[in-house]
Image (tube, rainbow, N blue to C red; front, side, top):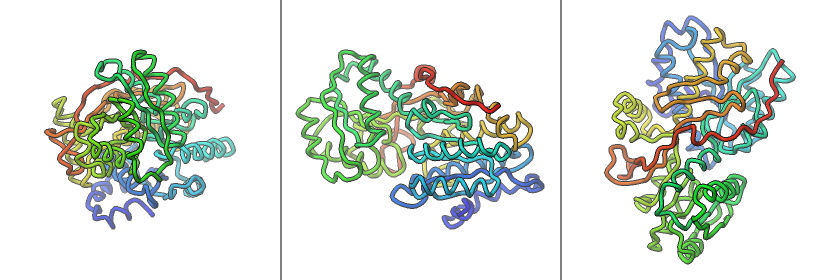
Length: 416
């Protein structure tokens, strides 16, 4: 299903009219394939991402497009399955689309990365560029790094650097309990927390380190009892979705005063699922939040948040998508055409972009972006609440991109 059809059904057709300006209609569009999850249990996140990509493309088209051509998004559903994602990539190639975006599930990202590498090696005249806006596993720009992929969002270990920096400056944190879903990401969070926070704050005690089945726990009270008995003042968790919501609500019901540092407390639907139990309790590591322009007195940036919410009824969350598309547009314009994918990749390498959300640097050695990160807390009394909850995010710490920049762990094969 094409993206414009999806949003016409959802009542968003009006937002697309400005993307079909007469000046841009004279040349064929530059097509971008969006391979993501639009069906199944996590479809709501995919739909939110699609809205943000639509908004990013709309903004570029409104200012004249790229080389006088508009951008057009072609949506392909991977159904949360790696095999379907690779099949969608084949469809992308058959349609002669040069640019593909995806993120979210790191397993799917790894499968797509492998498929893109193989295709580009065998078909140098039909190469595809893969733009990733936020898959979490570090290995995608480390052991599995590729000349043909760029990641525009800090990965899990970079975010853990920011968390460790926050903990190092917060003497109130003394005892941390690690609780994570039992899959690769959860294990990465646990391992890196011990290493990085342990180095930044050797006096901090890790009083628990548990893993639980993904999406199967309905009653977290046994874990809450363990957290309480351990005397933890902070729980650090990579949990997301219902596992996070049920955990925080169980904590509130038990009268626990423990803080929760999360990676995904702000994902679409999660604040609503957590509800009032999250007040002053839930923190998250994020690349941005809607109250940043209010805190920093940036009315133009606040207008971006207002425009997005007026168009789509949601807060702007995935700012990496806006950054990604702006940087792609700049790279294409520098090269002078949208066909030489290798030259466009080289134009992206090392690019520094003063985005509305802070300075973005694309490292040439591993194609990993660095950018500012925020530790935020769910509180009352902020201008923009989260999902009509009456609670919203406020900044409690800001960490510059240079602080989170990881050592180079990529040995990249380059064309030619």
